[in-house]
Image 1 (spheres, rainbow, N blue to C red):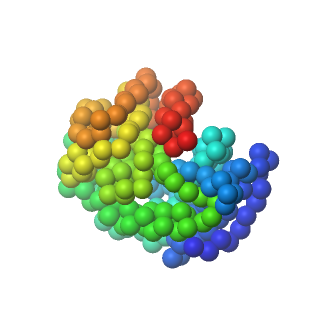
Image 2 (cartoon, helix red, strand yellow; image 1 turned 45 degrees about the vertical axis):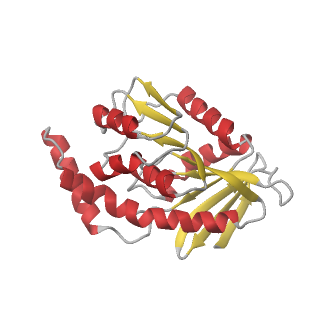
Length: 247
């Protein structure tokens, strides 16, 4: 991990850009984080296809909310996003998905797999490597939470990464059948957010995914509204969930 820039925000949060094996990322640490009192860490997921530069204002706002609870937060550029090389199969699948949605046709499993699985298969090892580097910093310690972004990546991380103690998942993207099977291996506490009228999400598929999770503690919060209409109080409830499990 190599830090490339840093700035102190007006609330005392330290924001640092970094690269890890050439992959861009951002780390936010609260002023309270020290080697003597290392902060828990929240991994901030983001939607696929947009990139860190586009998502920075929203990610920074979430990170500062985490800092208010005493947590560090980090985000990593996803495969195929920002300045990273495109994923050709995923790009074709995204176009096929748009055509099917606009035509009111069902989206085939092959399209969903081609859109999601290459990203998850590449991103999960990258996130785990980032976790190794972040937890090696003296001012950051466990436990670790995961929050938001591509739900399939959150499922994969929660299933394979033992350092993740709790996860907040946003049910707002298509999910391959294989990921639903992986969800049965997830046992950490979960808080799942669902927009009931999400125009980009199959509500029943989201409910089936929630049912598949093997966690003994799992909460589904459903709110009326479309894909971008998540109310502020839903985010506050998710933050309280992480605070309960990471503090």
